[in-house]
Amino acid sequence: MKKHQLKVQNSLTRKKEIFEPLHDGKVGMYVCGPTVYSDVHLGNCRTFVSFDVIYRYLKYLGYKVRYVRNITDVGHLVGDVDTGGEDKISKKARLEQLEPMEVVQRYMNGFHEMMTVFNTEKPDIEPRATGHIIGQIKMVQDILDRGYAYVKNGSVYFDTLKFAKDYPYGELSGRKIDELIAESRDDLKGQGEKNNPSDFAIWIKAEPTHLMRWESPWSVGFPGWHLECSVMSTKYLGKHFDIHGGGNDLKFPHHENEVAQNYGACDCAPAKYWLHTNMLLMNGKKMSKSDDNSITPQQLFTGDSKHVSKGYSPMTIRFFMLQSHYASTLDLSDDALSAAEKGYKRLTEANKVLQAMQPDPAAKAGDLDKEISDLIDLAHAEMSDDFSTPRAIGRLFELSAKINGLKGGQLNKKDLSAETLELLKTTFTDFIYTIFGLKDEDAGGSDNGVTDSLMQLIIDMRKTAREQKDWGTSDKIRDALKEAGVQLKDGKEGTEWSLV
Ligand code: AMP
Ligand code: ZN
Picture 1: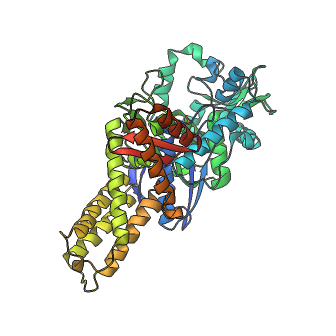
Picture 2 (picture 1 turned 30 degrees about the vertical axis):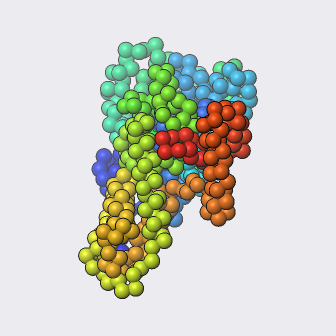
Picture 3 (picture 1 turned 120 degrees about the vertical axis):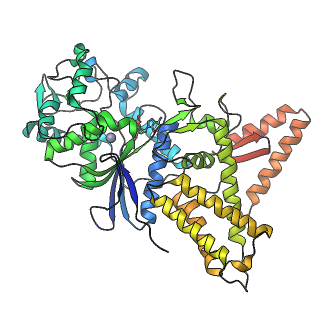
């Protein structure tokens, strides 16, 4: 099969470019991970699922990939340092009377569990900011030595005006330094001890009550948030590496300042390609807790929310996420999820039919053979065009229609050669499992369907109990299953079960 050149939309150049790794056959990819001070939300999950597919596809293409995704466990402030912003993790620890590392561990565990539920692969390295304080102090010193930072009362600030004279500050986000200064000029109070409103802290002197603090040449303090990603990406991937990713809400100031720090410390640009995912919306609006327009992953699995009519399985949600391009907004709604559930079922059912199909001994490659080969080729071409999962899924649906036509007899198996049938089989398994990272949720397989049969029996017993209005028994069944880690979902087409 002809190989398609991979193209990626590079936020840095605002162009779709042919992907050419810096080192033949190898790819280094850094993605900004979560700040672990609260439960991971669905928006975060969307971003990490998107990069999981990108990681999987790069490996599928044969690259040896080193995927680094960090854990932010210090430095991410609520608000700005000049307005008295407190470290998010320190604040949570203070409010809940926990050790900061207890907060970190709790939410990091939760994040990892959620990543497993969504079947994402683990990164190759998952560095934590607190484990890289020495490297961060060194980078602050390097930036000071090169004259792009200054010390004020024990804190160190990046000098954006000085930097902008030598480098294109704002190149990534498109923000202009003059506009930034004008924007923040109205807010001189917020400038605090910085020389210029657009400067940002790279080392912050800790207040006496601040829980997380380290010795440094300037003060006992802690690093600025942007610094960790500059340090950890280059430590594990080199001064110049292939891909840097994250949600587009991070483009400014986080990523812009990361680029500035790298140039400031060593006169080199960190990533060749910057990839940005777009935001998850709900019912057309930004998902927001304060507007009562949000839903947790758990609520989405169980259906326990006014925003959905029933629960949806993790793989349905993953499929739903893949039905839009990573760089487009994704609007979560009950209707869209319900359509994704049907679509996902259609695809897996077509795959079951396909995998059981035997070639016709008298088969010859005819028109159908060509149509199917072309569609297979197109599916790969779509994926190679900036990882277009929605268009690749579209091609698989076109192929599913052919499979159903072969099964129903509208199409003739004599027109499909054994080679193309075999290729179609591997195409489906490659796309569904290896590239899209979907998995079978019926838990049958390994025990010859015994679990399925038992579950059907239990579901039927509960149905009978409910028909007889024996709520005690039906509730007992549901609760006992929940305890055993099995989730029941009642829908129009009956009750389904899944492992939670
Ligand atoms: P945070 O924990 O806020 O540092 O975010 C972790 C990652 O999730 C970052 O790459 C964010 O850009 C991304 N992210 C945050 N909110 C959303 C959202 N609503 N939709 C998609 N990605 C998001
Ligand atoms: Zn980052």
